[in-house]
Length: 83
Image (cartoon, rainbow, N blue to C red; front, side, top):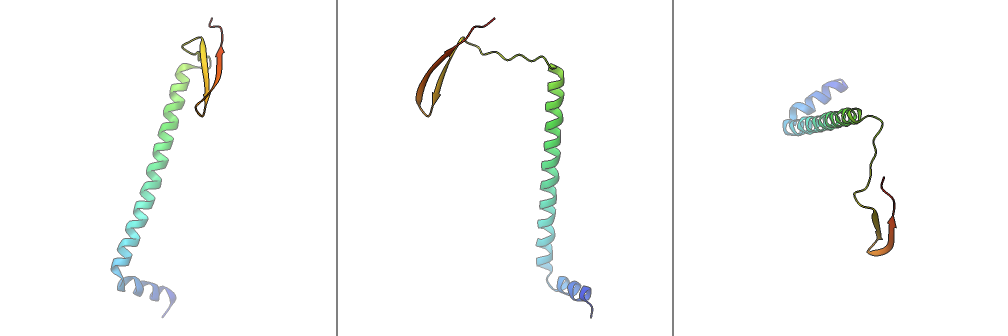
């Protein structure tokens, strides 16, 4: 008997264990493929949307004042000019 014969005989004897092993591998591979596909699709979508806006994006706040708080403590405010 060779090593591969022992391995195949063990797999034939324990069919339930083989089934759960194969199912676990399939679920693992499917989840990795799904995550990679989702990530690449989202990256492409964000890149496309950023290309639509171009390089000249200007983000301005809606008000002239900004209150600063940290951990429930008020740290004062900040005011600035909008042009």
